[in-house]
Amino acid sequence: MQRWFLLFLPLLAALSLGIVVAKGPVWQQQALLQQDGVQIFARGLPVSDTQFVDQYGQPVSVAQLRGRHLLLFFGYTFCPDICPTTLMDLNRLWKQLPEAVRADWQVIMVSVDPQRDRPESMAPYLRYFNPSFMAFTGNEAGVKVLAAELNAIYSKVERGPDQPYLMDHSANLVIVDRHGSYRGYIAPPHDAGRMLPLLQAVHQALP
Image (cartoon, rainbow, N blue to C red; front, side, top):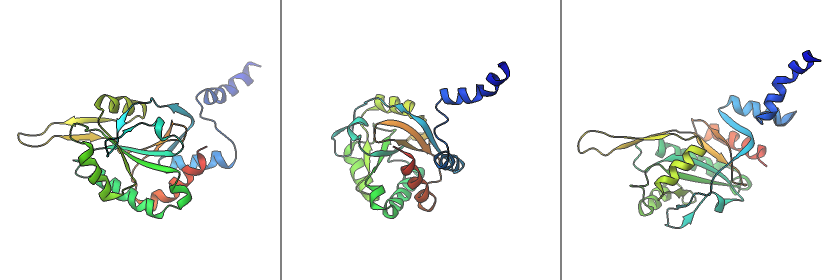
């Protein structure tokens, strides 16, 4: 009896952590996604209803956007490389996604530099890449809360005299499902050729 119990211990541990989600094709699909740098959690994690403003100065939060899956990335408009590259990649991806998939998703840029990223600067910035993309800004304390909940990391980098500071930040695309739960992330690179099959597979895997 004790021997059988020991054999089942790893399975019980996996179930308690929400790792074992299904058997058959879904399990295999999630294993393949993980090999491609995509992590989908078996159970969604809660996301607080932190209030921000969008690029038009309107109040917005994760809870207000329930009904669509969210693809969030943490960045800032003064970013010299990662952010514009990511936005260009996502714009290319959005043009290639089937309409039925695209309609279920919303891209959100969460500013890690709300002191400089005011709505009046974020609106033309995002419009340049794709007018359908949204911004979360205007709440420095809220960004810290959301980043902690979504496992995003960022920090301020001071430079020499008369040089503007930079922000170091993680580059993962974070997935929040239509119910407002944190469901995983997609690691870089995020070029459209790689992302097109991945996001469609994620779309099928989410409830």
